[in-house]
Amino acid sequence: MATQLKNLSDFSHTTVPNAAPYRYGIVVAEWNAKITGALYEGAYQSLIKHGAQESQIYTYSVPGSFELISGADILLKSNNIDTVICLGCVIQGETRHFDFICQAVATGLSNVALKHEKPVIFGVLTTDNEQQAFDRAGGKHGNKGDEAAITAIKMVDLANQLKPII
Ligand SMILES: Nc1c(NC[C@H](O)[C@H](O)[C@H](O)CO)[nH]c(=O)[nH]c1=O
Ligand SMILES: CC(=O)[C@@H](O)COP(=O)(O)O
Image 1 (cartoon, helix red, strand yellow):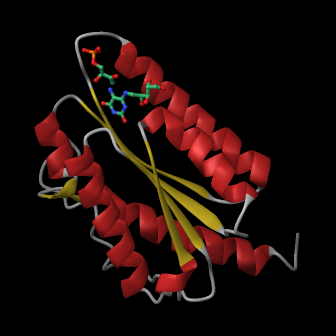
Image 2 (cartoon, helix red, strand yellow; image 1 turned 180 degrees about the vertical axis):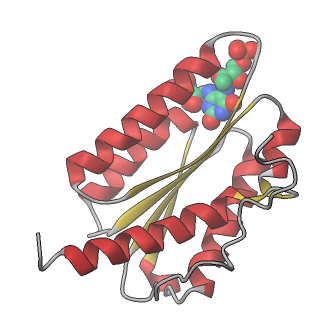
């Protein structure tokens, strides 16, 4: 499998812009809190590591990954936020609920990004089991929260560069 031995959070091969000039929203789902808490820690520390100011990071929690959609929308309506990082963990249960939640969140967050014309980052784990989630929240496959933060920095910097052109 593609991710068999890969640390998905290895960004040593890319340059990450200075995160300082921008304002970041982070919305974190409470479902599977041990995992989403690790995603949040990774994202927050990654923002700080790349120069973001603590006073420029606005963090809110929502009940579940489905509510990340409304949370991101509400956050972007206020606070003059430049980008929102959405962190969640959806784990397959006995029913097809998993499928509906995952599809709804992916589509919903895309729509929020287009509505506000700002980067909305999909930092949601969608796994078969809990171990796969732990592996991607600071385990052998890295931390999806780190990836989401770096993606946010890159996208908000790109938007800033293109602002005078578009
Ligand atoms: N099963 C998981 C959920 N389910 C809850 C939904 O996200 C939502 O809060 C509910 O349907 C009410 O609207 N959420 C997760 O984040 N992770 C799961 O594994
Ligand atoms: C993704 C979910 O909502 C899921 O964990 C709920 O579990 P179940 O499908 O067994 O009701």
